[in-house]
Image 1 (cartoon, rainbow, N blue to C red):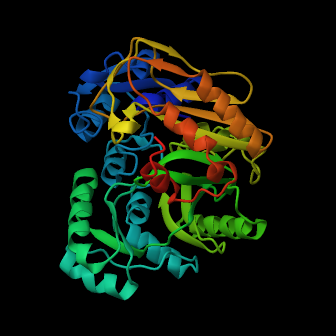
Image 2: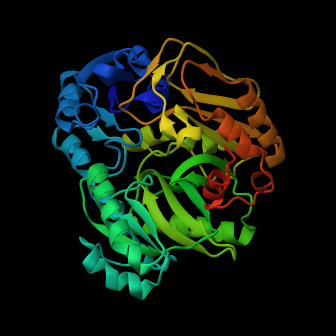
Length: 449
C-alpha cells in the first residue's frame, strides 16, 4: 500500500480524498494555488505545497509543478480526483515516467476511452448499442456537414476528446450547423486542447443513466448500481439519484451486462462509469466511459456502503477489491449540487466571502463540501461549493428528506442555487419521475426561477 499520496485537486473532492487517505493511514500532500491558500483541503492535509498563481492553467493544470511537488515530498502516488488532470493521458504517463502511481487507469486506457470516437467503435465491435453517429472525428464544419446530412438533423456536436458538457452543441437544421460547430470547437480547444469534434443523432426525451463499476487488476468487475443524471442544465448535471425511477428490470439487467462487457473488452481497471441514454421505449445506448471518479459518486456510496475512493486507491496499489460480488443499492438516494451562482441572472457565478453558514445533518444526510464561514469563494474555478446527498427507504421519502435538508441549509454572503433546487423538487414532473434531459430547459425557460 502507498505510504504518501499527493492530491492533485482542490475543493470538496480534495477534502474527500484526504479523508479517505487518513482512514487508510496514508500521508496526504495537498497542492494549492495562491488563491487557495486558506482552502479547507490545505488545512486538512498532512503536508501542503503552493504550485502557482490563481488560474487553473498556472496551478491545478500545471503538470510540471504537480510532478515536482510529488517528487519533492517523496510521494508514492498521485490522486487526480475529477476534472483538471483526471482524464489526461499525458499526465498519467508523466506520473509513470517519474515512478509515481497514477490513481486511475493506465495512460493507454485513458487515451483510448477518452477518445469518444475510438470508444464508440470499441463498443460497437463488442455488440453494445451506441447512439447513431460518426465513427471518426472532424476538424472543420465543411468536413462534418455531409455526415450531419447522413445522420439527419437534429444532431449533437460533441468534443471528441472531452466530456463534462463542454464542447457540445445541439444543431437542429443545416443553416445553423457551421455556427454551432465553430462554437463547440472553440469550447473544445479551450477545455481540452483538441479541435476534433464528432456527431451524434440527437435523441430527445431520453434519460441519462450511468452505471458505476469497480474493476481491479486481478480481473474482478463489480457493478454498484446505476444513477439517473437527467436533471441537467447545458449538459451539466444538477441533481442525481439512484436508482433510476423509470428503468424496467429487463432494461436494468441489460445495461449492467453491457457495462460489464464494456469493462471487459477495454481491459479496464479502477473506478469507472459507463454512461447511457435510455429512450422512452427503454432502448439504451452507450454514450461514453468516464475513466475517473465522478462528482456524484457519493450517491452510490450512500446506498451501497462501499467507499469508492478507498477501493480506487487499493486497486491502484495492485490490491484486489474487498467487494466479493455486485452490490444492489438499498433504498433511494438523491444528490443536489449547491453552486455559488445567481439562477435569476442567467446563472452568473457569485464569488465572495461566506459570512455565515449552517449545513444540514441527521439520519440519511451527507454533505460533501470544502467551504466554511469566513471562506472566500474564488472566481477562478467551478462554482460548485457543496453536494447534499440524502438516502431514505424509497424515492418519495428521499425527496422529502432532501427538501428538509435544503430548508435547513443557510449560506450567507454569496448567492446560491438553493431556491432553484427546491423549486425543481416541487415540480410534478420530478416528483412523478417524469423529468428527462430536456426538463430543465423547459423549466428554466418557463420562468420558474
